[in-house]
Length: 372
Image 1 (tube, rainbow, N blue to C red):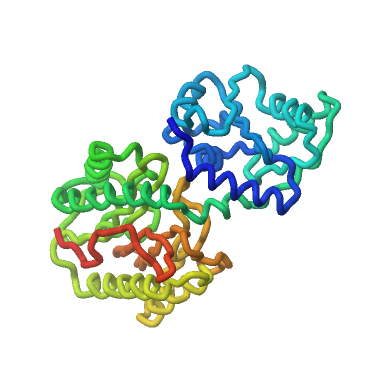
Image 2: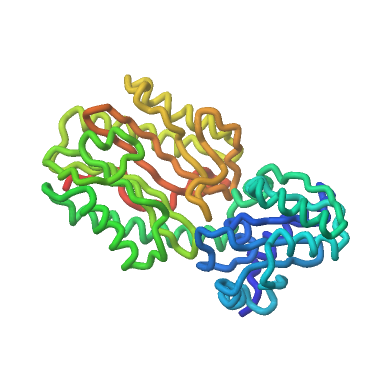
């Protein structure tokens, strides 16, 4: 297997940063950062079982026998990485490598646990070696915010599966089904039609439950006249999709349709206003103004959107306080909502990429209110 050009370019970006900051090495334990740099798809799980050390000339990955073979298969023989499964503690392995390389400044990422950091300091002492260990301050998260073409292709594929699931579930939902039954059908369809996993636990929130933005599906039976908020996504090659649609079980009331139309207007106004370099908070303000002008300002309290990629929530953000710039190549959601306690909720969410010409959604599902 040949080395991936995308991962080589990502490593070049990290090494450029290292040169700018005068770092001799970078120590990483974050699975998402390591996945991004190695290109090793569908290897990582919820365990923090790996440590990477990167210098200007080489890269090492310490793992164990559970993952070793998968890394070799996924990364290829000319990846530029040395994969090691020496049966020793990660902190000890790291300390010895930093000593052997005579590293004087090894930057560590923000997500490193205090326990690992303290153990690394201890192990460096045991090696009679010391080095500076400044924090990266989300530098890699900021690099990952700009997606390359390979990443965009994987995100688009994840969204294709997610869109297909929407078409399917709209033909499935009927009064009398529980939220849990609908979720099972929705998730089963994705897993049977190309998804490698789920982006997150799906939200199926019917009737008054829809007024809780992160409601958990339960035993409530769907009734005629309900709005149902469906927030879900497929995972493909470790990349996430994220989409929300609100559907109506039977003809909606005049108030339901009014609220839906306001949310749609807010969504489409924000998407149209998105341009390279806009601050996240300024994009949020576009949608918030539409909702406020319609008299529902008190019922939209969450941020307009968030970055999506190897993590379901990553940089950049587009909330009311976000100073992030939405640059070309950044992938993020646009998801305004209105939530009326005790009545119903509406959210409309697309995920897409910022281009030179503005926001280009991956999501293909209609913005029209679907009545089932």
